[in-house]
Amino acid sequence: MLLSEEPETEEIKSSTVDGGKGTWKHAAFHVATTIATPAAYAPLPFALASLGWVLGVSSLVGGTLVTWYSSLLIASLWGWNGNNHITYKHLAHSIFGFWGYWSIAFFQQVASLGNNIAIQIAAGTGLKAVYKYYYTDGSLTLQHFIVFFGAFELFLSQLPNIHSLRWVNALCTFSTIGFAATTIGVTIYNGNKIDRASIHYSLHGSSSSKTFKAFNALGAIAFSFGDAMLPEIQNTVREPAKKNMYKGVSAAYSVIVLTYWQLAFWGYWAFGSEVQPYILASLTIPKWTIVMANLFAVIQISGCYQIYCRPTYAYFEERILSNKSARQFSFRNHFIRLTCTSVYIAFVTLVAAAMPFFGDFVSICGAIGFTPLDFVFPAIAYLKAGRMPKGTKVRRSIQLLNCIIATWFSIVAILGCIGAVRLIKEDIKTYKFFHDM
View 1 (tube, rainbow, N blue to C red):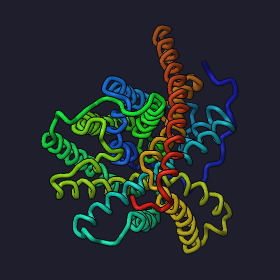
View 2 (view 1 turned 60 degrees about the horizontal axis):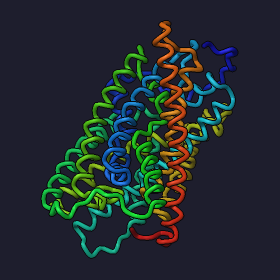
View 3 (view 1 turned 30 degrees about the vertical axis):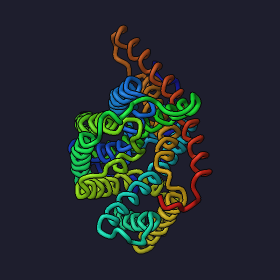
View 4 (view 1 turned 135 degrees about the horizontal axis):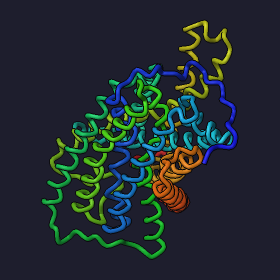
């Protein structure tokens, strides 16, 4: 199944090239940082509570296996037509042409903005929890901490590229493990302190309410596996890029299984249908361990934020710095980067502060942004590119599997979007803008 026509290769600006110096371990750090974030898996117990044990567990396990498989498919397309496509957009352009490039550009922007809004809300919530531990009667609100986190991200945004974040992301990966270990331990401790007879696992609400909550949960699970940056990460890896990326992705997913599944299952077990959208909000004792978990969370998501804002930065910088005179003056380049990053972070900070509905942004971002990028596109791109095994039975099995994945998760994207939009509408009725959650 070969392409009938190869689209023209788009000019790639030199500023987007990271140099391919990283090892598979660096790739694992980047992948784990973008996927296994507290903002992604802290809502999973709530998602399970909206689906129930059977559907919730099967959705989580299925999502893990499908995204691991999809990530390997994307990694296998590196240099599929003799050219190394160093961004997701350029990979899509090489396979689907003009519409592929701009479709991926749209979905990446939705994923980037939605992910970073959710991250900034989660970071503000974590910082506020730490602040309230030391200053019970303190006057600072959630919005103050959202702004503080935005200022820190503006500082990190001045680093030139993804590869320059490798040690930041190494720290973030260890913080992921620290957050998971601390939160799982405290969740089990809290669960044992609660009267187990008071915990129920039945779904609450009317039939329509339960249906929309289930749709919303599917979006949240899709968000939890969000990684819209695999080709950009693969571009930072030295040759053999495919082999190193396979190892990096698989290592990252071993961290994901150890963290996602444990926290999701134990969190739902501990609090049942009353679990909060952000698991740390359900924890009560001991206080110092909750503070430690919040600090781990803030450290980890600071790196994830950077990974997801890079395509936006690159897009605007490439166009502003498209003439040679702009490239000749280092001060001007730094000023342009500071301006672009300031505008982006100011916008994300404003939206996060005005509408701090964490669970809703997680779901809508997962449905509209990550589901097409992480589930649908890899399956159809692999088929379109003609990278099929020679054996007839294996080829047909892969074709059938990829078609099922693309079809089912297209439906999930639609359902998740419906559920998220409805909940945002309800929350806007309940809370005022700039509400101190």
